[in-house]
Each structure stands twice: as C-alpha cells, then as structure tokens.
Image: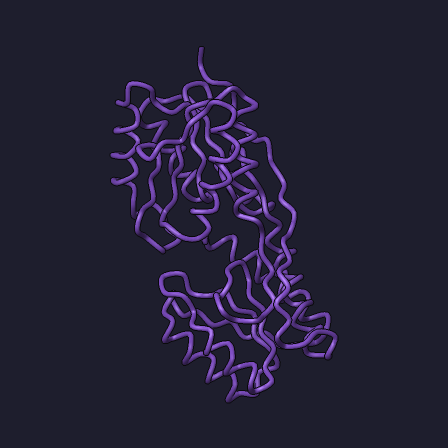
Length: 277
C-alpha cells in the first residue's frame, strides 16, 4: 500500500482518537510477522488500551497472536486485511467490487481487451481479477494471463520495478491483439505506467486507457489526472478508531468478527477514454 494512502488512514485514526483524548503510538514492522509479535508484547507491557492492526502480507499473521492479545483483554481491530482463523472486527473494502467497478468503467467506454498490473500478488489482487473477469468476460471481453503482470516488491516505491514493467508493456504491445486499457492495483503503479507509456510514445487515453485505485484525496500533479476507483482512507481510519473505542467501552465484545466494507467512489480523471478506432 502506498505511503500517502497509509498517511491518510493514520490522519483519520488520529483525529478520532484525539477527540477522545487518546494517545496514538505508531509501529512499523516492515511486513515481518516476528517483529509484529514483538511489537505486540511491547505494547501490552506498556498497558496499551487497544490495537488497530494492518496485518502482514508476506506471511499471514497467525491467529494465536490475536488470541494472546484478546486473552489479556486488549481490543484489536483489523484494517484492510483479514487474519484467517481470528475472531476480530475488520474494516475494509470489497476488492472484488473494485475489480467489478473498474471493469464496468472500461467496458462502458468500449474496451474489450484489458490488462492488469500490480506491484505484487496478494488476496487483494486475486479479488481484483475475480471481479474484473466477472464483468468483462460475460460481455465478450477478455483479460488473459499474458495481459496480467504481478511483480514481487512489497515496497510502496514501485519505481524499483520500472525495468520489469517496461518489459511487460513491450511484450503486451507486440501481441497480435494488444490490450486497449489497463487496470492498476493502486494509483502508484498507475502513475508509473503513465510515465513509462508516455516515454514509449503512447498517448493517454487516445492509444491506451488507465484506471487506478487509491485514496479520495489526490495529492500530486499526475495523480490528479488519473481515472481511479477511490477509497476514503481517512474515513477508514476514523471507522477503525471508532470500532476500537466501542470495544474499549464494552459496546462490542473483543471477539466480534463483523466485517464492515466502506463504499467505493470513482474519479473520472483524464486517463480513461474510448479505444482508438
């Protein structure tokens, strides 16, 4: 997840916490599940009142880590990603609906050959593709395997994969029936494709269209140009904090496993248009 998106989530979370005069401690474990467990123990030792967790992605968070917190009376709320086997609230969005919305927007413009780019494979990217296929294929379109790129970097700086992305685009361009639109798993990779494609001589959206996914808040010259499925990241942070507060006050049990999906939006931008010809 890109840095600016995480900052928006934190902004919403901290704003809600300050209303209740609660202190917020931010921990970064670099997607390391063992560092995450160590951070939990340090927080418990400090008498933490609750934890909002963005679970590790490279290795699934083991549910016993969650149970150890709950056994000590510590409320925990998951943000974006589930922990299989753990009974705990989750505040998220429907990744499958993101794929469906992107597919509908591209199909409405007349696109039938669609590519997909992500910085890494995950449950979210799998759900994106499920939603995309569910909309595109019944309408006569396609998103074949050769049009799907998933990198290996968990780092938010997608420029580290620029060479690989350029090679993937060149392979797709040489296909006898190349894609006319690309769905990107997040705005960061969409920005990167925007720059690379322009460097390759493509006009966007005249030659190829782009659809990203990101925060409703648009900071930056390129991101303001993107046509994107949007998530209110600050609201996600606020709702996560509210759920924690409900558990702290006994309004919700610690093992409440309700999942709350926030609504999606769409920003028209300037990178989605009809296919040429």
